[in-house]
Structures are given as structure tokens and as C-alpha cells.
Length: 260
Image 1 (cartoon, rainbow, N blue to C red):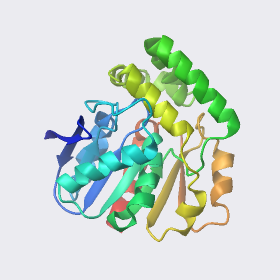
Image 2: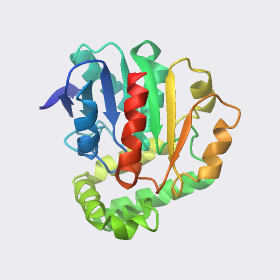
Image 3: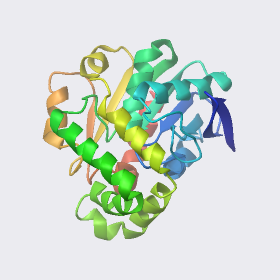
């Protein structure tokens, strides 16, 4: 059932289903809680699953010009407090992973585990900051055009033909994002912390899932982070959208992670 809370005088929308140990699902940039529909249906058979619309996305409203990852994490905490959820495993896709890391940093006692799905603990490089600034300018001028160009480029080359229908669905969902929401999230990602050391040293349960052909997060760069780490890393076929491109491989990994 879709529900909502008020956080700093703004609406935060969420969906919960199932019973058991809690799994929180956090979507990525220009996505919303509907991206988790198929995954939530599977995981909610044995767990209580809470899918949240992050600030400025889906049916959740904006709190300002910049939505920092900490601000988004605080909105997630507000939802969980309302639901009287003390501890949860968080699965975060892309930007949702950044929010998950921020949540674990701010609220360690409330974090049982984190799965970074097509996400990274590294903050933006100077080059990436330049790209973000360009994105902000493009979003302000032509949000629809930006979305229609950007979304297909999240997929691996082969996926663009085999997942045409799904790409159209992702674009349709992205087009519900407000201009302010898209800009505020981009500004927030640009200034996020580096969580490499924190993630490595944290005692929470961890899993990293990467796309072999991810055009956003270069595989070799990501593997370098974990080369001297005990953090389990799984590499799936496809690009930045593993929940679509490698759904059948992803599901068993997530089921095992939340079960153990």
C-alpha cells in the first residue's frame, strides 16, 4: 500500500509490503520506488520491504535547491521512525547507494547491512563535478530532452536493442521527476562525501554488485577500490541497470544477501 509522511513540511511517499526482517529499497537518480516493483514482489515473500521515493523524485516533494545525501538519508530515517523500524538492510541503486552509505554513517545503530547496486563509495572526481555542472545546466533548460538522451546511455550497447520496452518505461518514470528535484539531486551528488574508508571499516553486512559494461561506473576503477578488501563483489552482465539487464542473476544474489 502506498503511504506518505511529512518531513520538513514536505511529502515523502513510500510503499511497504510483506512481513519479516526489514529491507529498505532506495532508487537512483531520475528513478522512483516503482523501479523496485519486480524485486519487491520477490523479496516481500519472506521480508517486510519498504520502497521509498527519495526527495524530489516520484511522489516525494522537494525541501530545497540542494538535496544532500545526508538530507535524503534523514528523510529515509523519518519514514522508518514513523513505521517504528529500528534496524534494516538497505539496498541502494546508484544514487540510492550514496544515500544508503550516508544513512549508515549517520545512523549506524539502525543499519544492519548495505548492498550497493551499480553504486560506489567514491565521491565525485573534479572531472565528474564538471559533468554534474553541465548536467545541471541541461536539466534547467531541457529536462525532457536530457532524460530521453541520458536514460538509454545507462544501458550496455547490446541492452539498448534487447530492452527497448523497458528503456521506454524507465524514461516514462523519469519524466515524472520535477526539474527542481532533478537539479537538487545532482547538486547533492556533486558534493557527497567519500565513503571508501568508512565502508571498508564498517562492521555491517555488505555486498557490492557491479555491471560489467557499466558506462557510469567503470568496472576496473570500481574493482580497484575493493582489491584489498573483504567486501564481496559480484559482477553481472550489462550496464548500469542490473535490475533490468540481469534481473534473473540479480535476484538470487539479493535473496542470499538478505537471508544470511
